[in-house]
Length: 460
Image (cartoon, rainbow, N blue to C red; front, side):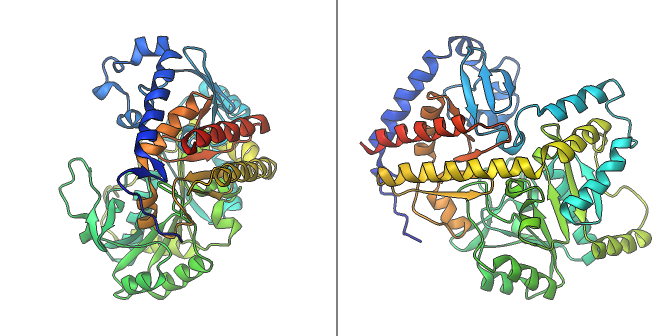
């Protein structure tokens, strides 16, 4: 691992003056290409707090949000007629492309049969078996978001262990689950900055260590007061961090020895393959969560548990006081979710589609790496299956602390807008790019060429 040292006059090896010039120039180009959007949303969308339907829409680095007219496959068209090769894909929500035909057909079929009625449909009969076959765990529940699924799974872990604490890795991402919103500052746990209305010290119930730090993990588990370790197989939501060889085997061994459950959150790493990182690398979680793309873009998530975990939970339920469990929402497990999820599992998340996605992701990885090497930029590329990320710092990164230090928001924002102006959209919060079954080789080539053009300008 190289030392990351951003001086005051440069970011990611690029002078701050050049970064500022690129962002200013590209912002002007963006505005000129979108007169209709500027007129409609340039001053915010009427009636919405902050001018956007969801606050994080203001986190896009473009001068104003792109107002979408339509999206199909791996292409977005805005109301000004600009076509964008979409590698963001709803930040994984549309990982398999926009409106995959099997999912669109399933939605149309179900729309005339009712959208929600708090009862299963025939599609649910198929889904339970599909989830068992695909991910290897025997018992499943449906939720609406991965945040909900993670919350519910953590409740189960606390219930059956009788322990209050959980453990997370620094830099983790598990949606907006409150108790995962902690970080390490100077080696000490702290609430993440910016939490709105948080009145608790979350570090009282959450332990936090660095990813890949097995001695710290072993020490944290020693007191046997942790109900559950919740982790992504790969840290994904800032700058990507891959596990060291043997890390996951040791994680599983240490948690079992401490009587601590292991929850694997595959919401982003489902890019690895049809059964996620868990199946490809033989992980053995007690609890498993997958959200975002599981229903092809319809809001849905799933969470599963092992035979032993389910048996322990059944024992707990048989002896607890009656009353609301605090788990579940009225619109979860509705027939529209069932229809879309079944179509996604049976016809979209196929071995053939994943093979194509992986092939093009390797091509993208190689193309971006070649451009970085050509212009001697101190950057690197990380990949997990169909998920690719360029990182504006040397690598590889080993933990969340290094990932945070490698994050270069001003430089990344300038690159993002420059890519949009060259017909390419990537994720707004970091430099993530996804390959879908609908993504073409021509689109990958355009992204590589656009990236190379921006890199050349920055390195000139």
